[in-house]
Every structure is written in structure tokens, then in C-alpha cells.
View 1 (cartoon, rainbow, N blue to C red):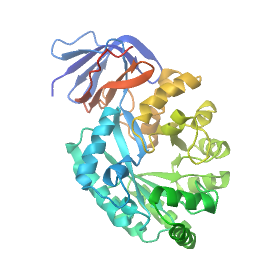
View 2 (view 1 turned 120 degrees about the vertical axis):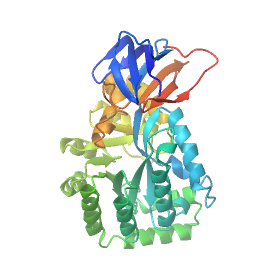
View 3 (view 1 turned 120 degrees about the horizontal axis):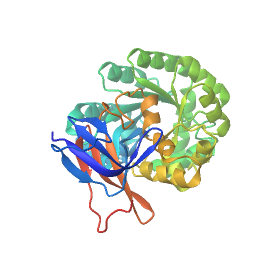
Length: 387
């Protein structure tokens, strides 16, 4: 792999921005920051664009829409993975965690067998991808059937993160039964009777759920797999998951819950689409409010990879955060939350995952992306991107 000398860049470090600076990539790692030059390297002039670490996305289920673009219309899984791999590279995301839901027979790609097959496909994809594709297994705690399946995937090395979630009506994302029914009818094409039956199945599955969660979290921790809880809705629930050893709180419902999670030392993850749209689609807390209050440590793309870099610049406009602090929401902090010590920062000796970003009009656009030192994306707009 030839060395690359990136010059004339605004290099985003963890605590500063180096203006008109340079970075040298050699053998897949960051060889030097602010080197004088390199006669052996290919030179790329970024013309004043930002150069930041490659984005780390702890939760995105966009792969589900690639695999099942319409209800019960399934594409080949390797084809779906190749498409979302390219989408992530073009969005500057060099470490995506593909969020796969195990929800028994809730709907197509979220059925246990299909989700497991997709997890294995991602694992087997390996170095064929443009970026470092990882597996995030989401366990619906009201489904006893998925537990041994997920444990087998952990043992096979086909899991990089495990989260526990409860989508039964009356709590979490679905605060009322009607909210759950409307979601199932609108998103999954169910009739009302079908949606009511699905709700009843979830409510009946609550028996034994806490024991299953304890078993799964313990299993994941023994294997060194990162753990998260989904849609936490109270201070009491934060205390419960912390006692179980969970390290990440995804999409805390309100500011009190996010504050409690932060106080307990948990990483908190909210959605970049929430930042971009100015609010939650389900009526939960606004991500920008959590960022301003200092209780949001990470952003994820949730369901749309392109929102992650856009959210960084929206945060810059709508908060007091500096560029290093805003960039940390999608780089350094997710790396720390998932115990990825080899990435998330521009620092000598670390993996050369990098993204160059400029502006076209008011929109931030990714122009170049490197994954482990390989240039995996390069775009050329009709006019040069503004610095």
C-alpha cells in the first residue's frame, strides 16, 4: 500500500484543530501528524477541508432496508451488505455497527432466522468490504427463542455489540398501546387485529425477561462484547442496567434518564436524525437538548448513515461545542464506549481511518475517506468544496 501525504488540511485533533496542517499515512496507520513532508508518498491537497477521524456508528439498521426494501420483499443478503457498505463509505463512516433486531417473527428481516443469517453474512464479509463492518445484535427481551441463537453468534465471534430492548406497549418508545398499534400498522403493514395480537404476544413474553437479560449480558461480557440498553425511560431502569454491567444507554427517553446514565458513567447514544430534524420521531427527548446539557456522549445514524456527518455541523451551529467536541460525538466517544483503542482519534500509531469534509453551499459533504489507510471513497463535485 503506497504512503499518502495529506496536506493543506484543517486537522481535527481530540482537543484542537491544526490549521493548514498535514497527516502522513503509511502501512494502514497514521505515521505522523504535521510531518514536514514525504518524498515517497502520494500527495493529496485538501485545499483547506476538515480532516477528522473516520466516523464510528454504534447503531444503524439501514442494512434492514437494503435487505427488505418493501415488506416481505427480501434481497440476497450479500447484495444488501455490499450496498450498505458503499453507503457507509460515502458517508465517512469507517466503523459501522449494523443493528440487527431479533424479534421472533415480528416482520421479515427481523425474524430470528433471517437476522442470524445476516449477522453471519456481515461476519463472513470480513475484509471484502470498503469499511470495517461490525455486528450489533439487538435482543427483544420478550422473546425467549432468540436468546440461545444470540449466544451462539457471540460464541462464533459474529457479534461486536449486544443490546437489550423492550418494545412492548406502555413504556419505552411506545408509551401507550395505541402508539404501538399505529407503529405496527404504519411500518409493517399489519391490520389492527394483527397489531393487537402482536402487542399481546409481547406483553405475555415479559415473564422471565429479567433472568434472560442477566444471562445474556453476563455471556456477552465474558466474551468481551460491548453491551447496551435501548430506550431507557427512567432513573430506576438506569440503576438496573448499570448493576447488570451494561456500559451504554441508547436513546434515553428523557433528560432525567440521560442525566442519570451520565452520572453512573454510562455512555449515552442519541440519534443524528433527531439532531438534523430538530426532534425525536417518537416524542422522546431532543438530542440537541441532551448535547447542550452535557448528557449525550455519542451520536449514531440510527437508520440513515448520511445524517452522521451532517449532525456534527448542525451541533456546531446550535450549541457551544467546539469542532473537536462535536467531532468526538461520532469518533472518539463511540470508540471509547465500544473499547476500540486503535481508532477514533488522529494520532500517530493509530489505524488510519480518516474522513475529509468540506461544504457545498451550506451542506457538509464528504470528499475522501480512508479505511485502514486505503482510499475507499473519493468524490469530485462540479465545483470545489468550500473550506
